Length: 157
Image (tube, rainbow, N blue to C red):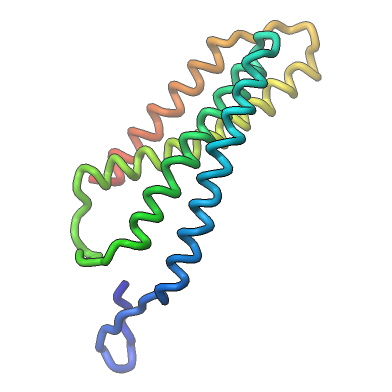
């Protein structure tokens, strides 16, 4: 990153020490390996439960966390250890735009599914005899993904 100093008018470069990049890479790879083991166990546990909207959402949450914890550490680790040969001011290419959309969808997707879980629990507590339909949750998730793609598509242009 290049930072401009007001007093001298010259640009100076700020870089992180190499050991810090390797430290963060190690932590991300540890997160990656833990997710590789624990999220499939959660998914299998909820697959054996009685089918309901909560089990559907818990399985979806485990799947999103699994994909997120696989994708993010690998991409960030690659970026931390590769030599930076490209300038920071260039326009993003298609791969970087898709990377941004996928990262945002995975990041906000688990928060959205957690919110759906909280809403379904609240509705079950307030109205215990109400029958919640899975298709409403699936429709909400599809709309969420469409909004994330539309917003990121307009931002990344």
